[in-house]
Length: 165
Image 1: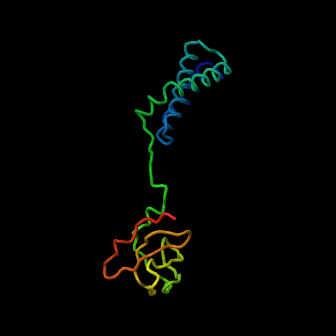
Image 2: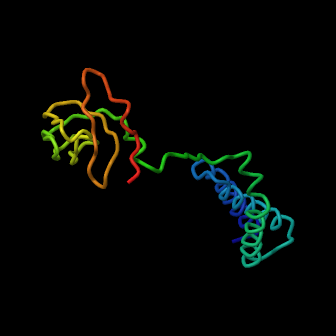
């Protein structure tokens, strides 16, 4: 491989990595590409002249740029970060669901939630919930959902929303 082709390979690799930043955000591939372009410049001006020197310079230059410039690059090319709720139960409280197997007074039945049926118990043990009844999720005890029956849109607001076992 002649000298000009070697310079061109490093330059194309550098620009390719910088363009890859669009698909792989975070600032790392951009800096790797920038380091490759730097190596192409050093090769063009004959400051380095072998493949081993080029790869060593690229490796060391990439590490230096990652530590020195990553925070600067991420300000201009920010990564997409999603911060979500890690407690899935918090998202389920107050959801209105349907009873698929009657919940007898003082016993357990089943409710339909998230595409499957779950064991459920009524918060007021003396009240049964018939199949087809709409209930509101109050909290969970292990794998059992504690629910409250909806009565014409009225919900007992004296019931705690979150139960800490």
